[in-house]
Length: 590
Image (cartoon, rainbow, N blue to C red):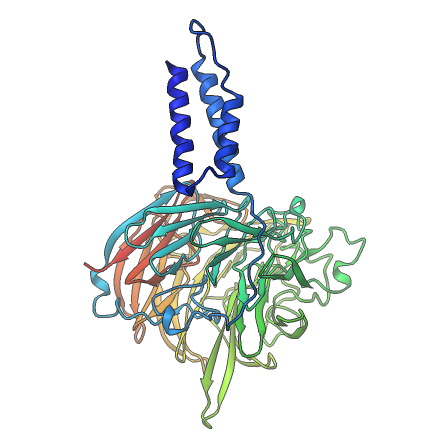
């Protein structure tokens, strides 16, 4: 009877596949064949081993599921029209890439949720999975798309949160976002170092690119793709030591949108400092957070991170192109237009210790905005940030710095890590998230962490200094800055770390923070808390975009994903990440 029950379950699954696809698809045939191979007809008196029956069934089911993750290797049609930027009227309630649009503004023109009703937001549904969600979900019409840190993409009904399909694209990593374009979802696959194109309606993987770097040394692709015309551009990750080997050398790669073929590859590590025979083999300078693109010129603006080894520069003295630079790259041929240094040789910042030994990446994307000057002319401005707390406005055409400022607290930040420790340094990491822009205002979240930096050979680690801040885990700020002048408009202090990328919409800024672990707490190599006397939680909050006044707060139960929320279809979507859990929480009005 147990054998018959198993067969009945198998047949029901096969029938389900037939119903879903309308015909006996190759997938259904493979499943039926796989089951049939393991289903000899026993004599009536024979006893079935229920465990082996279950194992055979599960093995066959896993075979089918694995095949469903194999790309069909179809070629997409070439672009016949102008690529959507995400700012068109038809996208008023959409969110087409991790930072809303191709300019990376994190600014939505939606008008349903605003300053007058934001305090009425309530939870509409919660979607929970096994792995963390770090980035803003995409919103396209009546669907929401979200990706976990195992590189699985989920399509959800925007009104109910019910799962419509899911697609396993790769091994995963700290995944930083996806992009929608012409009915397709484009995403990195993490640790197996590819890019995938997924049909947004069915979840079918259309193509996967070749590997863009060697996964065996830690190379991964977790950056949000930039999609324009028939180009798909991604960066790289995995260059830090610790925790990786530190031998990954960064790059930016352009693929053909139609089939995933590589068009060009720009190396971000240039010069003798990464030459043959270096011990250790220096590297890093990865482009792990994506960037913006100007569709009028076809110029990409992508930040490149720190060099490695992170905390010991003994083997990498002198100029280290293009570590900690903002890069302008021609998307058509991969040619460098300009490079502007942050914490690197030639910087405009004062009292900076070079080379960087504090992991002060130029990171977390870039934004493009049009600024009206006093003489009535318009100038395109690129905004970039780094993990020391520096913000710089640059001329989009030349890279020339227009203004620069620092948010957060700086204390002994030019003291090098030592074998016995550097002593207290603030910040450990100031700007740990994307920023938002709207009209002539920039909104940024910064955290002032307090650490003791240790260096031991090419390795190193950070040790938290609990008593340097009230919370023990650092404090934060949400700050509004005038894009034309760089002057601060308002500044809202928070007693806890504000590692949640802001979003601006309809006179409201959304961001968030994580509460305290208590004192003391255990920490990882980067000084991040693991276990303490308290259970921390994440708080999503809304602020008045004109004044910085807090209008609304809500406890979401877990740390909020660093990529921050997205908004559209009359709802706010907040990603969360726990140790073995992730969720997407949808808020709406009554």
